[in-house]
Length: 92
Image (tube, rainbow, N blue to C red; front, side, top):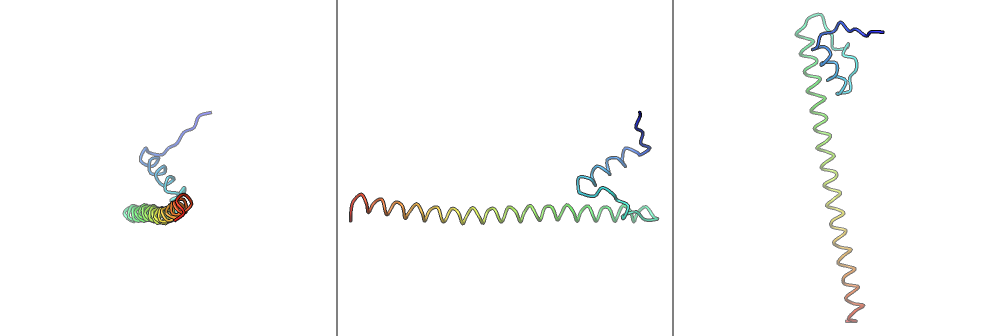
């Protein structure tokens, strides 16, 4: 059993890139003229990549905010524990 694809190397690479971006079928981007295909695929690729960058940036912001809130709570708890320990040890 042999597998043969009559696709060019560029078509295979293009299919792999679109699959990594989450699109397995690029048929909706096909048009009768070639420049429209390239423009549509390029714009959609730029949109997907920019959306990915935006989502990663939002995730970093949320994690940073969570870390800051936990750090403030931790410092407050440590301060309370140290004050209680000081009070118990020295009975001021």
